[in-house]
Amino acid sequence: MISPEDFDFKSEYPDVFRFRNGNKKRRKVLEWNLGSYETPEEEVLASPLAELIPRVIIVPQKFEYGVKGSSENWQTFGIWQSNLNAGTDLLTTSEKEKVDKLIKGIDSKREIARTLYHYMQDNTHYINVSIDFGGLKSYPASYVCNNKYGDCKALTTYMKALLKYAGIESFYTKIRAGENTASINEQLPSQQFNHVILCVPLEQDTIWLENTSDISPFNYLGSFTQNRKALLIDGNKSRLVKTPAMDISDVLEKRCYRFFIAEDGSGEVTINQKLRGDAFEALNYYKEQASTEDQKELLTKYCKIDNFTLQNWKLIQAHRDTPEIELNMQGTFDDQFREIGKMLVLKPLKLAFPELETPSQRTHDVRIPMPSNCIDSIVYELPNQKQFEVRVPENAVFKTDYGSYSEEYSRTDSTILLTRHFQLYTNRISKAKYKEFYDIISSIRDYRKQSSIILNKKQ
Image (cartoon, rainbow, N blue to C red; front, side, top):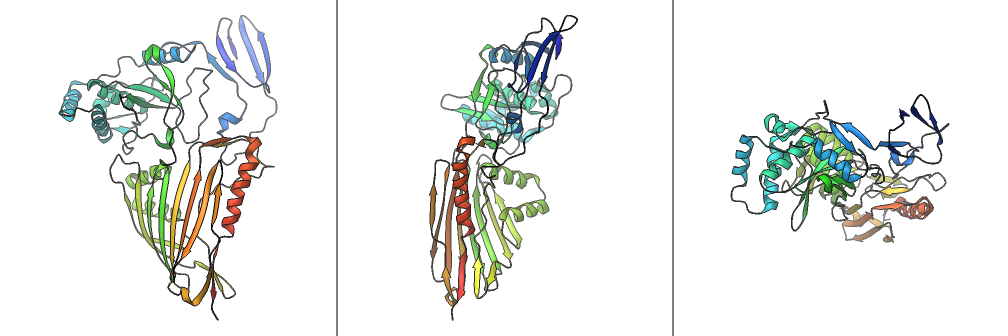
C-alpha cells in the first residue's frame, strides 16, 4: 500500500504475513507478503471462507464518499451514514394523502406499522440502483413514491419515511445478509455490510422489517439476517445492535406421511407438512414465483421418496404474516421393497443429515448459525401384513449438548408407525471438540443405516 505520509489508518492482519514498512518520495510504502498459500477446502458446517483465510484489512480513519466521514469508532461511522442519507426520508404530497387514508382510525402503532408495511410490499418492487453514490447512499423516498421501485437502501428509506409521517420513529440499519456470513469485525468500524433493514422500536417490542421482499411476513427477518450484529444508524447515537435469533420453535418442520404399500412395493402416499424456518422461506418463494412445472420438479426432489411421481400438491399460507407454510401432496411410487431371499426390506424415509469429514480430515471449527428441528410421523399401511412375520428396529434416543435424535416404532395388524425427532442447536464447536460431535452424529447415522423394517413371508 502506497499512501501519503499523513494518511492515518487502522489495519489488522495475522502473524503469518511478513510485514515491511518503508518510505519512498514522501510516501508510505507498506507491504504484506504471505508467500505460498493454498486456499482451504470447503468443509461441512464450517465458517465462511472470509473467516478462514488470512487477510490484511486496512481501514482509513478519515475518508470522503459523498460527504466526509470518520472510522474512528462506530458512532462516527454512523454519523457519516446519517449525513450521507440526510433529507432522504420525505414523502411526496400525494403519498402523504394515501398514508392518511390507510391509517385513518388505527390507534395502535404496531398496526399502523403493519398496514404501511403491507402497503409498501404491495405497491413497490426491488431493483438494484447503485449509480453515482448509490452503492452506499440511499435514493430518496420520493424516488420510490414516483417510480414504485428501489434497492434495499431506497425501499428501507421509503418505509422509514412512511412511518415518520405516521409519527413512528424507526432506524435505518446496515447488516451483512446471508445464511452463513462472516461476522462483523467490531474492532474495525467500517463498511462491512451488504444489506439494509429497518428497526422500529415500540414500547413493548422492537419490530424488524425486511423491505426488499413482497412476501416476507411482518416483523420477520428469517435465515437471511437473524442472529448477527448490525449497525443501527442514529446520528451520534449510532451503535452496533444484535438482531433476534431464530429459536428451535421458529424452525420447526412437522411432516406427516401415509404410505399405502402393496406387496409388489407399489402404492400411493399422502403427505402433509407444516414448515417454518428456511423451508418456509424457500417454499413460500416458490409458491409465489415459480411456474407449475418448476414447483413440481422442486417438490418431487424435496420429498426424498424413491421412484416417486407427484400428482397433486397445494401450498397454503394461512395469512401473509404467518411464518409457516402448509404443504399437501399426493402421489404414487414403485419398488419400495428390496427383496433378500424370501424377505422384503423396507427402508424408512430418508432424513437430511450432515455428511461430516472424519476428525483426521477436519481442519476447521463447526459453525451452526441457526437450529434445525424436524418431527416426522410416517405411517406404512401394509394390507397383507398378516402374511408376514414383521420385525421393526429397536427404538432409540440420542440426547447430547449439541442436539437430539429419537426413533420410535409401533404396530397394529395392518400398519407400522414411525415417529422420529431430530434437533440440532445453534452452536460453534471448536476443532478440539470436533471428534465428540462427529462421534455423536456418526452413532446416529450408523443406527439409521441399520433401521430397516423386515417382512419375512410366513411358511
